[in-house]
Amino acid sequence: MNTDKSNKKIMLIYPPGKAYQRGEDRCQGNIENSAATSIHACNDLGYVASGLHGLPYRIFLKDYPVEKGRVSDLISDFKTFFPDLVFMSITQATIFHDLDTIARLKTLHSGLVVVLKGALFFDPVDTGLSRLDLSCVDYLIGGESDFVGARLIHCHFNNKSPHHLGGILYKHQGAWIKTDFSRFEDNLDCLRFPDRSLMNNQRYTRPDTGRAQATISVARGCPSSCIYCLTPIISGKKLRQRSPENVMAELRECYHRFKIHDFFLKSDTFTLDASWVKRLCHLIMGSELCGHIAWVANSRTRPLEYETLALMKQAGCWLVAFGFESGSPESLIKMGKGATVDDSLRAAGLARKAGLKIFGFFMAGFPWENMDHLKATEDLIYGINADFIEIHIPIPHAKTPLNHLCTVTGQYSVDDLGHDYFASPATGTLHLSKGQIQDFRKRVLFDYYFRVSYILNRLKDTIKNPKALIYYGHYALRLFVNLVRVRP
Image (cartoon, rainbow, N blue to C red; front, top):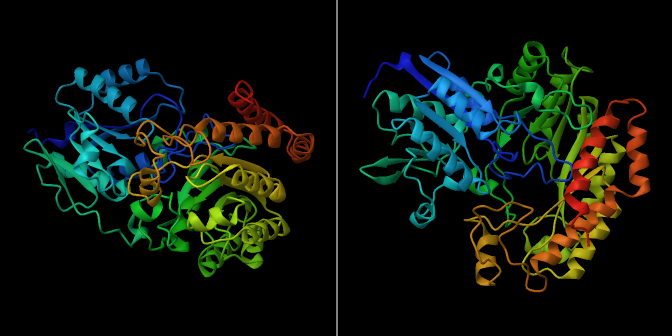
């Protein structure tokens, strides 16, 4: 092998196709078919790029879906740059298309080294890999690629075994070798910030203003036990947080160097540690960023106090997203949510009192659910009356308790590959067909977003920000196109 690394070129890509949250392995959401979700930045690629800083590699980074790039554009870029290694972020829903793309690139460069990254490759059993044609692939990263991606690339071009790297698979004599998937990195502050100089930051926008919005990962892991969620599996149940000072440093870099004023502070459990939130908010409020940045965050409905939300508002938070999931007490218990309907109503009330907008996420189609369960969820949706909502159909991802439940109840006819929240692989529930669940989702979304009172409330938002009318209109058109032809 040629070990002259000065000639090695690395291509980091999201391949052409539909826009998915490829960098967020927990959800891997389908953006184009969603109700109100905006695309987040390709931080996973940015972390690999920053990890290669100071090393003798040339780097090409591109998010083809957000650039509206076609396969022909990728082929042209590939021929021009002619990389030695391609690093691609995949999703369960797009894996077959992604592998086809890799196979096509391989025909252009037989010596191409291929690294695929995604939750699909987290500690897989042998049968999991046998479903896929991985003949063109050299490495699989199922762990946290931001810690190991650059190190893996450097190991390869230095002829070193990657066996000491956790959370990966590599080929040895034609067989896949799996490394240790049991450990997670605790020191999140040791990571270099994702290299935003290689990203087209203006493509990742705040949905109501169209301004650039950076995603900043502030914590990993979740101690909860929701039966459908991948987070406790791929990120661990231990809450691992960056120091508020480290988060502030990244906020400052984005603001001063890249002129970004809007942020998604990414964490499944942002408000879980109230003291951590307080420290971060006070740092923002005592800095030059106070009054000049705006941000959003996810939150659980419990534990949650008004003082935390009020402080977030003072520090620039404008929207908080809650996974309310269901209005059925039975469903909340069976899905392991660890919260009640009253908790959902209380959390929404506290957020409103603090002056925050609300994004509510709901789910419909668990194996035990019937129309009464779905009606309870619909009632909760209107009872909360969030500013934005989304309804997901549960995906029985491998290794989740939901996967096992769907299998034993006979509601799982195919695996999760090639499917997303809006095209679940489950056949339905014990009482409802897949079509009934999909029709419920589409009907509720249509009726909710296109009612007169909702439209008037959004128009009120545009009084102080007239440009918001354009962006709200864009999302309304996308939603209408997605729903109107199949509305029952």
